[in-house]
Image (cartoon, rainbow, N blue to C red; front, top):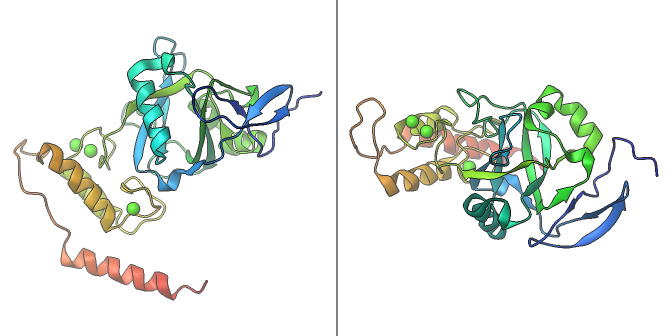
Length: 254
Ligand SMILES: [Ca+2]
Ligand SMILES: [Ca+2]
Ligand SMILES: [Ca+2]
């Protein structure tokens, strides 16, 4: 069988210990599908995916949002136990374009990638070769990668290495007043989702609640003074803006 560099939507991985549903053969490789893949837009917890510990060649990373409890549990087990947890490879669907969430946290300033995960598929022990790569390679030409793979990634030497702080809307790996400012700046956005803490695809009041709960766990510290302070509340003007946004959305004909 001639194996070119294109695959269809039938995908693409072999799993062990995490969701098994065998389905097809492509390019001589047995592949598996998960039956209950989650839409990353519904994800509320963001994980960092990077190269296997001690095996780094590209020194980059990407962000994987997860909402499925079983997937979150396995991601946390990978962080805790490493490769011995099994099924270390992330198979996910991606799209071109920055969304404010997918960043390379291993580079100074955590620069955003020009592509992002749109749907988690499964954890796997291996994937077909066409899905092997690295975040920086996808970045070189995301449209080409998507055209060649049907829009999937399954990097052979990458796994979940860390859980990102909930409510860290400015991507500096802590939760403080700057994250509240970031939430206000992107309030109402459906494209810059860095402050979409509940992962529903827009930045709204629910994401303020996510941030507030996160700071409540540790206490709010002002980045400027280093002092603990009261948690700010959204202003009446901001709430009015949100209500106006909702009214506009309701007027959009289906
Ligand atoms: Ca932060
Ligand atoms: Ca900060
Ligand atoms: Ca939201």
